[in-house]
Image 1 (cartoon, one colour):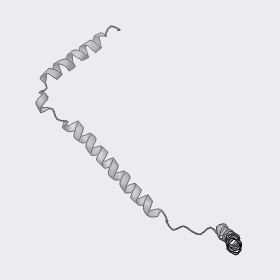
Image 2: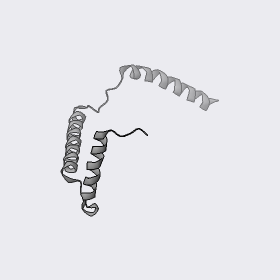
Image 3: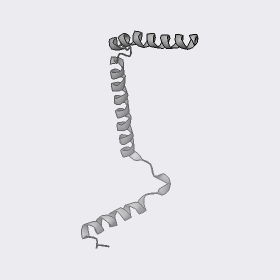
Image 4: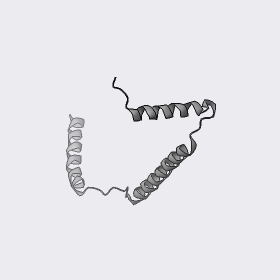
Length: 89
């Protein structure tokens, strides 16, 4: 394991002393936790508002395909003629 530099050692010393001062029974998320939570809530709200706006622009009615309408009578005739032969035979 590499040796720790002087600055890393100093930082660890300060963090360890800070950790000793914190009462484990009274630890709370604090202001930073609230700010992060509030920012996430605002982001979700903005995304939902944007999604709602985009969904309102969508036209859900599907226009019939003119090529499919032309193909349907031919296939319907073939199916009915095939069924008529089966019933006769």
